[in-house]
Length: 209
Image (cartoon, one colour):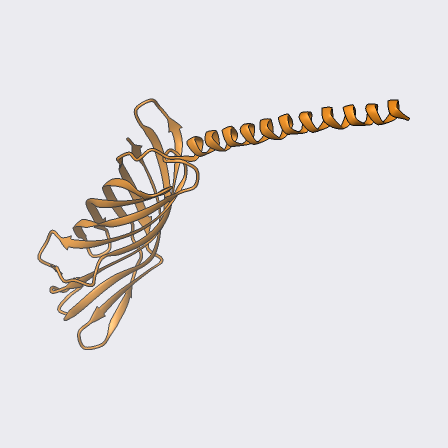
């Protein structure tokens, strides 16, 4: 009986010591893994720049007159050249400024664009991102009245398609609305109010550096 009690006591002591060591090791290992994961998930703050060329086709173009009438014009291509500079404000989220030029073939309107955009990156700053952009247009000819309340609102996705040491080649798809207040007619002698390029679907290519 004494031997049985002694054996039980020794077994219990060994199990207790082993359990303490195992629990401590597990806690220490878990903390190390958590620390490593945290380091892996932390995205370093960095300045992100893009330069891109894009082309889009409005689904509908509304040309409005001051007397309340208007016309629907034929859809024609839009061309753009944009530069953006972006900086992280939250993890995976950046705020940026956009500048460049956009040309609407219908109406022959070319404008300088200036605005802002917010991007959400799905993994890191080299990965696919979703962005929302708004920009005001400043017409480069006398047809456009540079008035507030007109410009772009855009939603888009940007993908890296080729990665290099110093830059990435990017591809983008987007949906865009563009509008301008007018002071000169686009067709004949009408009295124009504004023109709106609705639901333009576009593609673009560029570099991120």
